[in-house]
Image 1: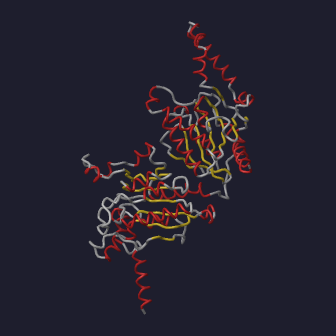
Image 2: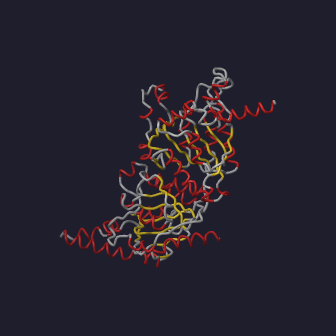
Image 3: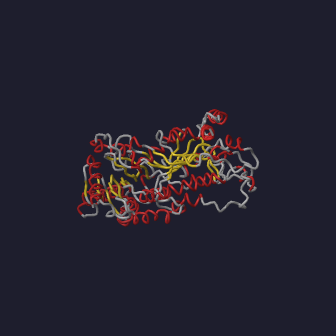
Length: 507
């Protein structure tokens, strides 16, 4: 009889964790247009795969509230943690193991309490030990001052959660999703993740309204602090989503590139690539059209699209195999690499190298952005990071030169030297030089041009000299001088990348 009573008590505690038991919290979330923590969890993880840690925890407030109220109002102490499987139907069961951490904003505004931190510390330790990827939902208001049961600490600054979370760098991939308010400690977890996804209804800041006001900096509404549109433009957010549903779907797709190969794929007609570069070398073209043809259909996922726009970063697949992509966008700054896009690229390459993702570079750049304004953006240090990162790459890098490949910028796009990639190939439209052709002619033939007084004759001489420089710097000549490995049919690009990668694997 006693055992039966305990089992019933156990069942009632399990029931208390469900959304149906906490109907008021459920209704409030839905009325605000948001999902509950457990609804997000169910969307993220494969069915019946979740093993929860610390489900029966409540806030450390037994001395100020009755236990029944704590169970209802502070379920799981505001954070759901556990082992799970994600995407097993796409990449296979053996590659699908992961960790899920979901903040519950309906529990004390998703704040971080005493047992809450213990739960985080334990699951982070497990993620690190087993090198498991982590997907975390970070909505919440930061530290919680109301855990009055804790009498053995003053400021609570000996909490190891944040250093443990940061220590996952390079071993366990971290994908953060945010919807709603994310301040202080929650924002620190969001910001330290490898990839950051936020909904349009997100406000993220290292301090919330109370802390700002307490610091004597004025009163602010939460929606005035760190709106997601701002963070998309300053590079804090990798991907902006419409809502929690879309954000979770994006996170699952992003995770697949780090989980392994997909068995099924579709490819576009590669002959299209022969027509996508304009005959006039001065005309721009949409680089994403080229990417979409080369990649498996529907496989390209772009990161930080509206930040550092002259270089495109993201992931795609070739015959189901995941690759990272670095591509020049000649419709932005003519493809020139400015300080922002250089830093964006170096951070991206570092992350790919840490997690063993092979890299493809599609190059069409006149080089690094120059001028006084560029130097004001710390161009020297931020651009040079690309050479530092390139020298440390251990993953295979394949370089495809689409058109312009000039100066230090072109070298930086392919690991620091044209011979760093395992294979460097150019389309027939490729053109090479120590700097842009027009600039090289203006500098190298300054006296000859100034000697011609008639403007039309000077322009004709200039065009003639540029045409001569173009002939000398054409892709065929670069290949003949062994500065690159080959000139290829654009339609063979996909095939060439795969062959180079597969030969590297055999080595």
